[in-house]
Length: 76
Image (cartoon, rainbow, N blue to C red):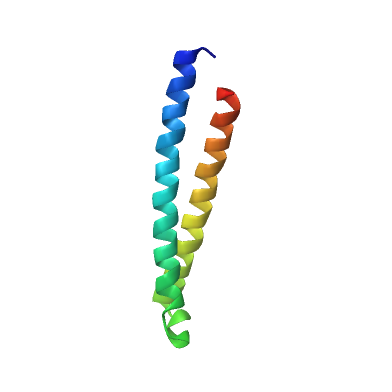
């Protein structure tokens, strides 16, 4: 991989890092909403939807992190 290609991969890594941060922020927001609900509402459809959204966003952040790690490996 030449310097031009490594620079491009570095730009992708930076963009993905920003996306990961935004996903983590939204995940935390959803988790906070769930955590601040009364226990009775946490078991409701809305509570379960918030919890599922938080879990899915956490998985998405992990996937983006894996992509970043892969790109870092090829960029050297």
